[in-house]
Length: 262
Image (tube, rainbow, N blue to C red):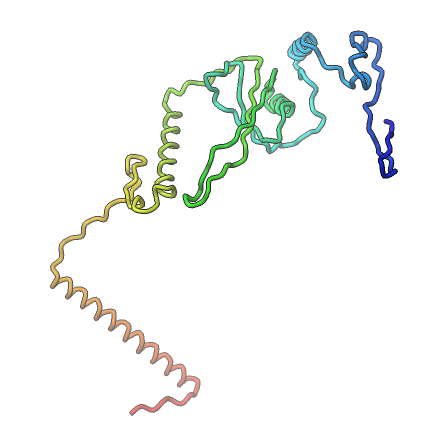
């Protein structure tokens, strides 16, 4: 490392130059040093033949076909979700939803150490999430971006067929649930549309019409209502008298003179 350069204020400015190293003769025999201005690189990139040779050697010996990471992680908390493939992927490819901070080397290391799966090639893509709106009166927003990685595998993997139609039932349930939430909390729940019956799940979620009451004559209803009212008034009067009696008995026990009544 060499420090050089002086600023216009007279202070010394540190400039980090690329270190110059000399590789052994066996490794540097096939490298043209004139292509590298700051000296030979610390690690010479492998060509296609060397990559294939290292892969075959790792498969035969049962070891990793790449340089394993040096940082050990016990009980990783990252969620790596296997996604059902679409028509564009071959049986030798698999897609995963990964955290945004995970890179290709970490996914390759993770799959090999946890599941013993060799990722021969890794591609990644980051795409935005869909718009969401919690309240119809508030603006919409997006959640965190989604990162998806696709790997190439040594052996093919074919998803089992959905013979019972379980996947189709889950998709249908998700669509009906979204329709119900839109009708309850979305724009369809405002104004005169809030009393409209729901169409989700065939209308079994309600709201239901008010059930009819049995016919009762007006004279009978007035008598029933009057008797209930009189019973409530009598019960309130009895409760009041009980409270007064309890208060007088408590004062008599404490030696307080009783009030005189005419």
